[in-house]
Length: 321
Picture (cartoon, rainbow, N blue to C red):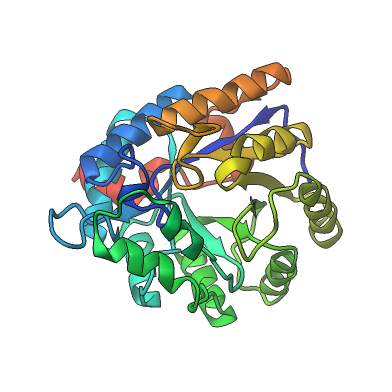
């Protein structure tokens, strides 16, 4: 692993895991997502990881959205007001087809797209009992469905995603929920499915069905990645829920980059809801400062990850036209 003097902060703005009834601070409309992203970038995030949500005030308000026009509505604003790298998910939401999951990345051709490396059991169903009042029926159905429906990411999907990356010059955030996902990535690489250049690995800790939130897992993930890929990769980590800042501190200490945001945790401290994504970015910056580390700028992150530049994204080109 190439250890950089600076750490890339990724901020995952809204995600598909949390629901509106879990926190009043979850951004849903394109304007809300754009404001949160811009604030996170101003606070020090070099990469903005983005999902979309349905803004319509109907029974599906806040449900994950796949429509490219919804992504375009906030991506243009983010590009106009920040230099941050835009990362559009290919993860989608519950019940999405693969075509729907890929609709946003294909239409907007961002600098980075997420790349999930295997099937995962997202065991979110226990959260139903922890939400004081569920506002929308879809929230209960979505959470309870994780008891019987795994999150599917097949090798055929990975091959297609890799081809998309090669064709559009898109880099990937390789999301690893378990050690076996590193082996899956090695297979994809050996098959020639992936774009050339440094790998950007994102270790996801604390999701039920994946690795736990123990920092010791990062040591094992780092050693495994070095055995499989040598030194030509960058590694980041996130901790879900209560593990967010502990994992961030451990990752930064081990030479890794860090990811925070309301997608990964709705809290800023024990029992205290975060009031926004920028609040979490500022807190992780305090951790970096205590370790005598600095956050990377978007330009420095682009150099580390060899991205194509914001001017080559479809939403930036559309704004010019």
